[in-house]
Image (cartoon, rainbow, N blue to C red; front, side):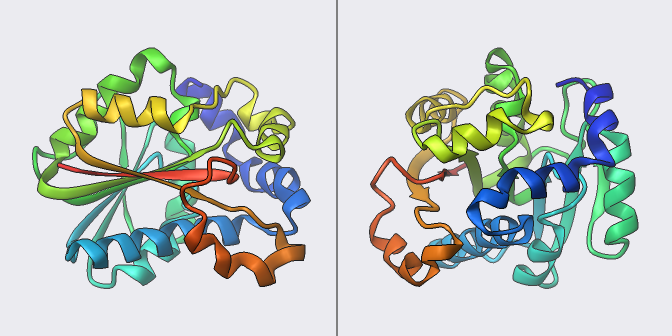
Length: 230
């Protein structure tokens, strides 16, 4: 999608997302919170206490309060190509993040200035031919030893595919297999790429969710994460 298209959908994004994922029995907050909580656990396991966190493709800020809460004291840099989305984010969470507009194919951050880069279901909106560029840009801004945690929809999950196909915001989206995305990360210079699958049970089966910690290898989850080291 172009900047103009993201701007066009910015005001309606929350409503569209809520309607699309209603089939899961959860709201957008559940999906935003679990991603950031998983990212926090990954950082703890890696011994990383980030002081500067980049939210790449921050949109209207659905991840912002959770990043702020899970990484207290860290500067949150919310970057996006949509000025309209960033304006909404700034209105919603004026003290939690510093907004930065992505222009000219460049992330507005200096080389090696970020400890942790985070992105939540953004790359399926980016043309495949541009993935390598943006993964290299993310590698540029993350310091040596820092981490990149990427979440995406799993094209092998039929409910995920159905949700994407019925969401106006996702009308041009192309879902990416985890293995393909992992390959692109390595090609862009990232190392120690780790793959995990997530979201196996809807709200009606929430009691079974603790089992997911042993199911991360199973490529049927609704979403997946890739962790990579700079």
